[in-house]
Every structure is written in structure tokens, then in C-alpha cells.
Length: 114
Length: 111
Image 1 (cartoon, each protein chain N blue to C red):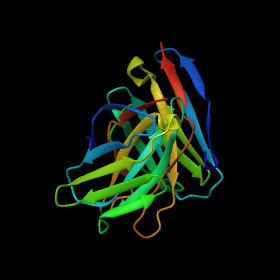
Image 2: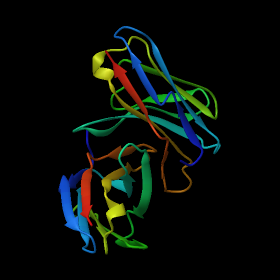
Image 3: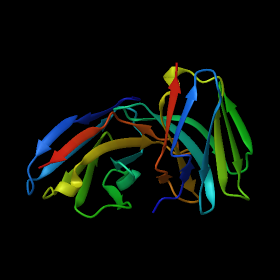
Image 4: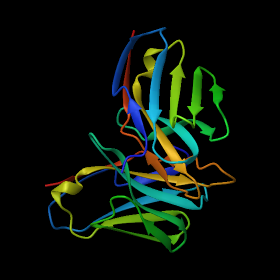
């Protein structure tokens, strides 16, 4: 998976608890992304980062925050998890050069909020 | 909002047949990409076609792009059971490093 790891791979938590998902890359790519994948919705962008401490919102950012203190790590935090945040979360990286923006994906984290 | 819309939503074919999947989009793009996702795995990049290209080949894959119709097609020739997966198109809009993914097509290749 192109030097991308996600942790944890599976997590079950309760409504109202904070949750942090970690994405770690060894490719030194500048851009990192967090997506969620739900049946009937495909992949939707939550937040992305275009450099250390540089982040921006995606399509479905409400209820999520991110941080990137190092090139290799991108953290996604659910401050107070809700059942609607039950999903599979994917991290992706890219290193856009010229006109291309091919993305490489991690293996995913399956999160269940009870 | 979804930029790319794939068609059909599901496709079932016999091994050895060709599989054609279509993607339509709404706005101007810099490039269009196709990804594959095997069950329980992350997405894998298959092929990228730029807005100034009309056709591209990679092994058994052939992708076309018609910017006047805002559509693309992915052809997998001589399909194999191992091609069974979900396929997504993704558009890279101009001056934007984000990709917008469609909802995906489920391809089943029967042995």
C-alpha cells in the first residue's frame, strides 16, 4: 500500500467519546487526505493537508478535525463520536507534479460508533 | 457533491468477455482517473487520462475521454475472475489538488 499505514485498523467506540485515527506515510509526499466511505455515497473527502500545519476542509468536515505536525503523520479526530460517523476511513497521499494528482491509499480503518 | 457518476452501478460478465464502464462528470477537469477497490482493501490507482488526451492504454485497460460530452469510459479486455472489484472514476478539477470520486461500479467476473 505504497508505504501508508493506518491505525487502528478496527475500532468500536461509544457515542460521545473522542476518537483519533492516525495515518503514517514513508513516501515523503506533500499532500495527505482523509476520506470516509459509506454504502451509496462512494468516497467523500473529510479534510486534507497540503503541508505541515497546512490543512483545509473537504466535503464532509463537520464533526471532524485534523492535525499535521510532521510530514509523515496526519491525524483525524472525532471530538465526540456519533453513530453517523460509523464508516470506513481511508487515508491517501499524493505528490502532485505538473498536472497529475494520482493518489495512493492506505488499507482503511473500520470505525463503529455504538 | 458527486462530480463523477459511474454507469452501470453493477456489471456481471463471464470470464474472457470485455467489461465497459462509463463515467460522466459536470465541470471542467484537469484529468480523470480510474481506481479499483478489492473487497476490504484500499483503492488502487489504475490509469490517468489528461484533459488534452482522448485515449490511453495500459495492459488490458483502455480509457477514453470525451471532454465535449464530459464523459469517460474504461474498457477491461479479456476479463478475469481476479478483475472482480469495485471501480471508481475520480476527477481532478483545474487548479485543485483534490479528487472527487464517483459512487463506484461493482464488477463481477464469473469463472
